[in-house]
Structures are given as structure tokens and as C-alpha cells.
Length: 339
Ligand SMILES: [Zn+2]
Image (cartoon, rainbow, N blue to C red; front, top):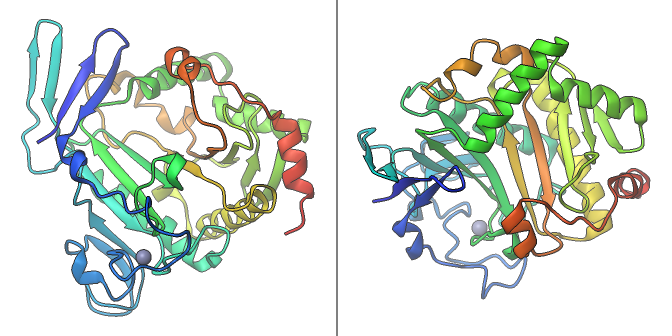
């Protein structure tokens, strides 16, 4: 049983999840790229996972011949079958770890990567995430979903087989709440979204652009926290993945593949975290003031954060990152590299 606790000093939430302690670390003793007989995410091993929640497949559920599968996480940080009950005792505010924790198995291929996966496979992966987000949104207790990928040991990954995690929570991350507030203020002042203006300025400056496909642009953000950080954003209005049409998904998939091919050409098979920044699922007392005009001022984006250097005390204590590679230099290398 997990607990969602409010840190009153730093003004953020913490998930206390003892279940996670039992999670096996399979990366420690596995050679990179070597398929392992007991990998629960490989095709043919469907019986080793809990029954699937969703799949894109040409066969019956929980059998072979699939392109993407979504399953509940066995070592979940939160669980769905709980009441949304909170408890405040003086300075100690907590609630039961209500939520959903799902694993999207990106591809049947054990050593698949976003650089080597076909565009149709990446489209299926995006489609699966999109379907899950719109389904989780139907549960009004769930307020926010974090969608992320960890690749490689220094990113926090414990399973080699390519996968993405979805953690849906009954609370808003405080950092996102602040961004919504500032985004709405900016919109009221300028009549545009902040990300839209950033993108327009990046497109004009050109120096940090990596590539473009359809309405999507990949660029190294002006104030990148990580060396070779890449953000993918769209010039069209879309707050979440499930709002994209088939063409958008195709362009996005193709751009993701290209960006990873360029990053790998420069960095090899690098460790990274990837996060989808998307609108909250539902309204609650915290985000309610910012929800009505969300479509106008909020834009989804994807952030790719290569984990080349380890974070130290300065980053953890201040939230200020030290990035040794100028984003202009990173973008130039990525643009000009041969793929
Ligand atoms: Zn596998």
C-alpha cells in the first residue's frame, strides 16, 4: 500500500511506495542487447505478465502477434482500487496511493530502440499511449498522468526491454500547477501560449532547430537543462496526444525516429529519460481555475533528456542544472550529423 504525502517545506508531493522495493533490477547483470529467456516483455512470454489492458494486435488477447501491449505494473507505485481518502494531521498531509500504474511495451523486439523501430511501430506506440490517456481520463478521480520512458541504467531503468510507464494520480504535480498558472497569465497578457511563442522565436532564430516534420519541430531548448536535450512541439493547438489525428501521429513518429537516429549518431546508444508533457486529465480543487482556457494556452510537448552526466548535490538542492554543452552547438551537431 502506498502513500501520497505532501512535503510542506518544499511544496511538492512524494510517493511513499514500499511495493517498489521488490522490483527486480534486471539490468545489472544483462549484457546490452542480449535477449534473455525470462524477459516478461518479449513476444511469446505473454503469460509472464498480468493480463493486458490494451494491445494493438492481429491475434487474440494475451497471445503472440502484437505490436504494442499495455499491462498493469506488477511493482506499482499506486493502485486504482482505493477510495480517494486524504488525511491531515497537523503538518502531515497524506492520502492513500490511489492511481494507475501501467506499462506500455513499446515493441515485441527486446533490443528495439526509437532509432531502429519502424515509423509504423512508433505510430502504434504513440497510439497506445493516446488510447490509454483517453481511457484513464474517464476516471474522474484521476487528475494528472505522467508518461515517461527510462532508457539505460543511469536513467533509472531496471528493465532492458523497451517500455514506457504511465502513472496517473489523484493530485497535480506542483511544478505543473505553477506552469499552468504562469501559462494562463501569459495568455491573458499576450493572447498566445508561451510554448507557441517560444517555438515561433526558435523557428525565426534557426540556430537551435534540429529538424521538422508536418507541424512538429524538434529543437534544443534555449535553456536546456541537459546536454543534447531535445524538445518536440507542434505549431498547431493540441493539449494532449489523444487530440492528434492520424497524420499528426505519423509526422510525430517519423520525427521521433529521426531525432533518435541523429542523437545516436552523436552519442552512441545513450541513456536518457523521455517525458510527455500533456494537459491534466481532469479538474480538481487545485487546477480548476486554470482549466477553462487550457486549449488556448497549453501545448503538449515531448522532452528528451540524455543522461550523460550524473546529477549532483547542486542540481538536487537548487533545481538549477549545470549543462556543459551549449544548445546551439548540440543542435548544429545533430543537424549536420550523417544518418
Ligand atoms: Zn524482452
